[in-house]
Length: 280
Image (cartoon, rainbow, N blue to C red; front, top):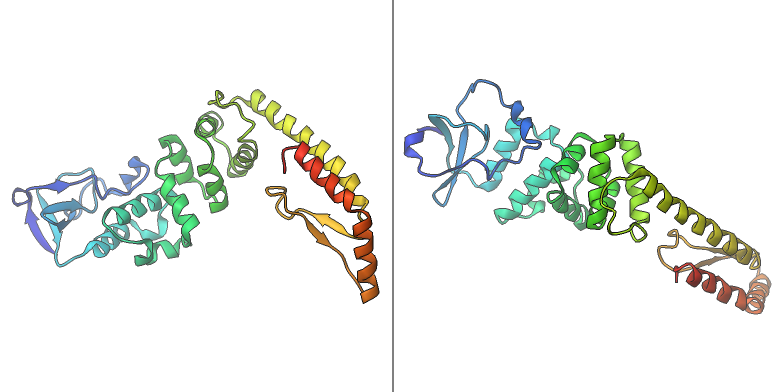
């Protein structure tokens, strides 16, 4: 690392490397610069690695440094143990922008970000509105909730933004809302784009009534198949049914098979009910 004066630097990019979020969090910078900002040079372009909003008369230039080294310097300078989810999303964008893969950096593994689904979720978070990102940056939300959030249609994403601005919900309330919105995303009118508690509750209530009716009809039919239990293991996200029974002998097995054949119309009726409620 060597000291270099500003008049010898033809092209400084201050924004490219700025992964800090929210922007005001650059308050992590001290009021008065104790040390000059650091630069990393690639292909004749100098990238500022810290104090992103500051200009200076002198800079430290990282010598013989590749992108991973520059990124490590930048994150370590601000404390890589304290990154929020949006900052991680910004850093992911940086790695992709400079042609690197997530697997090249232990930083993501430290935060439990492994696997294609989490990487996809992290990438999409960058494109959310500033209001949503600020909320996520301050809260500790599971990837399960974040994955549901990014899969919402655009009008429902707008509802989420409005919900955050109006209610500033707790983490618990936010998780419940996201789960409801995801479950109901097909039923929410496309022209509903702002948080309206009364309208949403009517939509949620209508779904609950339908679900209660469906479960009531299903329960009667399933009872006719005893001792064979009929279940759906994923809350009817698919129409796959699990048939479960116990036997103590070959004779038990034959008896159950015989009963199942005698009651095969029950299974047909179960699928008719599922089709009635758009589940098949």
